[in-house]
Image 1 (cartoon, rainbow, N blue to C red):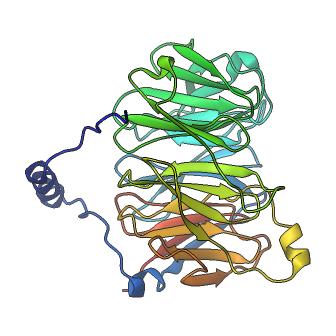
Image 2 (cartoon, helix red, strand yellow):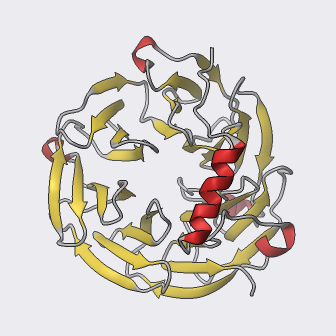
Length: 347
């Protein structure tokens, strides 16, 4: 049976939100159909090489970005200014995720090294705090547990490894049939994993060694399409997966039935064939809107409707942004491709 998530009651939620307002923190993000299509670029940074990964700190006050120039860059969300740049030239860096500390990140190198398959970097003094050896090929997925200092990683060596940030060796290892896609739900009660080409499994985080409590073979939109990312909706009721065609499909998180198909507006057939393998979508914190880049630009969909986008922002560069990220605390998002763009709603 699906484990019961540990969610706060209404009184706890109201008290937490009041406390955020008293401390000067913004209230939870809520969007509507008018405001979401009115977002505009507030700041743009040109990058010499494409951006590969973006992430926000727990409090939403900082953004970390990395790209093919092997840099890790820390930005202030309040000012949209770059506060620090660190370079990882020896092995490069392709993926970055904040820990629960706003100045410490986990980095996956572009050039695989089993002795340093994941590195913990302290940004305030540009120092590696710890190395996590184990993966024999490139790490493509890192997801930090939402409530404690553990995380899991997936790699091209077809393994999922589980880690405690206080120790170097993994606490467990799970073998898969393909390079896995992984994601925790919002409470950290369960995680999802795509362990075969089209097979998704759901695990109880407290007893995943016993195997999944739900598994299903998923239908793809074409035989040649591959799944490229997996994430839970914030309300934990649904899961969405992106495909190499640029499409996004949502599934019920309980019985894994297909719910909605989201299709970017694309041009000619030749453009469709040139779509890169990975566009990384993001869901708004209020559970209402999905963002994703494509060959033709940046799109936003109503998560409850599916179909074609509510709006498409055209981009100067092709392809459009490969990575997008909603800020889970503040009403803004970022997109990363050949440029890093900060987006704000209409005033």
